[in-house]
Image 1 (spheres, rainbow over the protein chains, first blue to last red):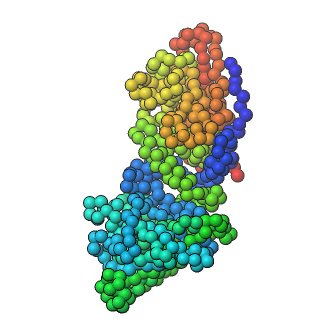
Image 2: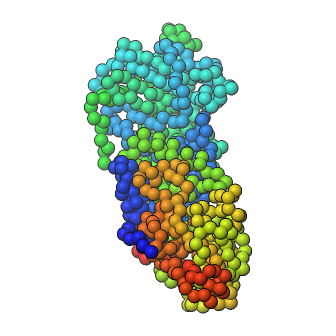
Image 3: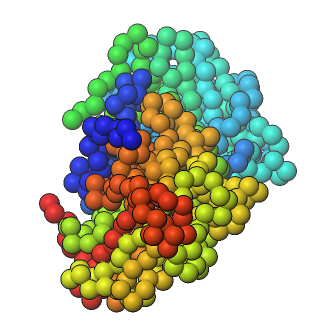
Length: 303
Length: 303
Ligand SMILES: [Cu+2]
Ligand SMILES: [Fe+3]
Ligand SMILES: [Fe+3]
């Protein structure tokens, strides 16, 4: 018989990551090869660090399987897993460094599922009438303070019961608490909404079981999602967080950055209330956004 | 308003793993806390090493979701993923160190789905009559060479077409090429089977796509699975590999260890052929197994 030549190194505990990495040597895409080589190196280092047992390995396989099988058209359990392990926030942060020169980003979250409905400045996005009315306003500028006339501001938040419209298609009007606004000639925007409140991420699946097993609560502090963009500038995906919300220092998905926290003020000014279409006194939240210029390289990591 | 006290550190790129690890501080089970802390540390280090892009993160979420959704009662795609990344082999090796004092282990694989049917020594497990008949025999001993009378040997392999019986319930007789044998008073076993051949792992799912994208073939070199056990000894899950098989140095799941490779000999001996119930000349494969004593600690890693 023709015995095939054996030239490649066989698996061993000591050299496991190198042997597996070598199997990716013929990957045509160099970036895929780089990513897989790094992944294998860290994954094997993890297994060795903790000396993972066979029962733990089985539990991990079972957990990942159930996580995949919990995903549907309206639910992404692997994003949720990435969120509660801080991976989503890390990827977001690495890819949108600001070094203080622009509005910091935070996670997109799993509920930007639909195009927000276009609305006029001043509109009320609170279509179900629940919650505490709030005037939200701000200005979008570039890094040198230049107002970005016509900037686009996409916003979305939960209703007073802590759910997004897409989570309650039979309860909330479609497009409830979502809006796509175009800033005025000074880059300013304003709209009526409700004071955001904290809410739990979906915790009836495998990720919820992980949170329960680790004594972590599933809540996110009160926030309003923003995507701001303007031609010639880098868009930013972020939230504004409400300063007096519970869970600000224990966000289940690690989304809070100090620079994104704002007070909700009570304004006692009948003229401004009338202008905004709100009863006096009213709640108000101001959030200005600074976008980076697209023609300049993004800031590097500070390491 | 009562502003809740904020005491915990917020997320930052620099301290991402520490901040997430701190969220597991109240985990009641110290082992779970240890495993998650190590996992987060290596996972974040991976993301930082490669500066994972948002598109790559999305592709990973999609890949994991499809992997979970490919799993069914007869298919475990996450085990397959663990296999092709060398993780299964690493876990197996860490948990069954031998340092040369006993038969080395290798991966169980996803096809030990059923109890093997009990058979008598000398029986033929090749129920579909395909392939090249082969006499398989060996002896099970303890570390000091003591024969393990009555040891149990569970074996399974693919048929000549490269499939296990459970993969072809409508084609192969149930229990084809599986058997549960009890060794004789000298710890010896023998049975009739076929010369094992190489076969591909299922490659029509996400794991197959990963192999294709990295120019890796899906094949495993020819092998016969064994689980050998005896009261008072540590069981071993292993394979015997056929020395002239293709893919011995590029097993898709990294299962090959040099100590597990054996020649298939052609024996020209009419008396032994008649005794075994095979036509002369016949093929023969010998695999002796050494089990560790359960009352002695398993060997440590050599580092
Ligand atoms: Cu690592
Ligand atoms: Fe949200
Ligand atoms: Fe196999």
